[in-house]
Length: 397
Image 1 (cartoon, rainbow, N blue to C red):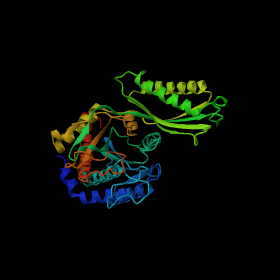
Image 2: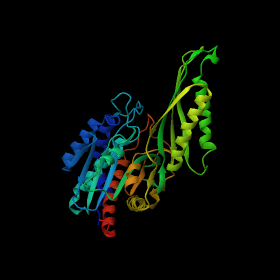
Image 3: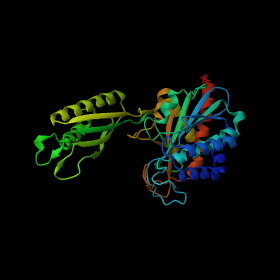
Image 4: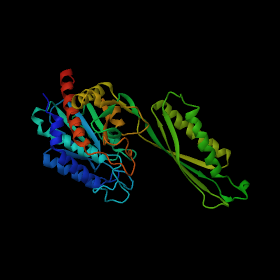
């Protein structure tokens, strides 16, 4: 019999809230999470959980010594957003906020660590706790952890992660197997011409006209050159160029993002964007360069780990508290773990039940309910324990 994870987690609600509020008040941007990392490590020392450092601000802790092995992952970085929640523990750092809930994620994994450590003598295997930096900034922390083989020597046979979800109320979980998040690529265009007098456009190429045609042409890539049953998004999100009404500028800069569920179409689309950029620039007598910063792959939930999470969540919260999750065009670098290992990623309801809606992820007023903290900690602990039992019983350990 497993411990009553939810009851035990609720008994440590005060410490979970304390973790979350301290982290929320002192957010740090991607790969700059030094204070956050030291706080995480101080809690692990108190719990007497061994750990090692990765990527300077990342931490990998280990509970147990014998196979099988599973991993629980959280992300620890914040966003460049000015907080507008009015909370008494709001960010003290100008222009930086935990607007994606990574403070909640970290607090819940610390809670799960305490739960699992307290029952380590009965733990049917080993649990790796991955406190990962840099989820919000390419190339992301996950791929670098894997490239460095930082999870060795005992590689996990399953990896699990959870994300706060403001569209569902506290006490619920949303999940689905298959592809749930998209790939993401950042696009940066640089258009250049001689520039000159607006009354003499024939004497120089016009990067504004070229940029305008490029933006309009790119819309057809999704609307007319993609299977309509295949999810994809191409958005141009920034245009910068020009200063006066009578001057044709010498430079125009554009930014955008490409997102897709299909890797093959993703690569084809990037090639088409490059070709269109060159052709339209030549047509208008300007020079153009497209910089592509390749981002995360699609996040795919594997069938067996997802079924395991669903079963645990139903047992912990009740059958009707487990909701289907409709795939979205968000991106998450947890996708790199699911490329390498059997994995599942679920969404944890954090909307106060009395509210029909709340500000969403990446919003300056995002304020998830702290009542979700013990639920998330209990889920992480229960999923890890159940996965280890399943691996043992299936002979995979």
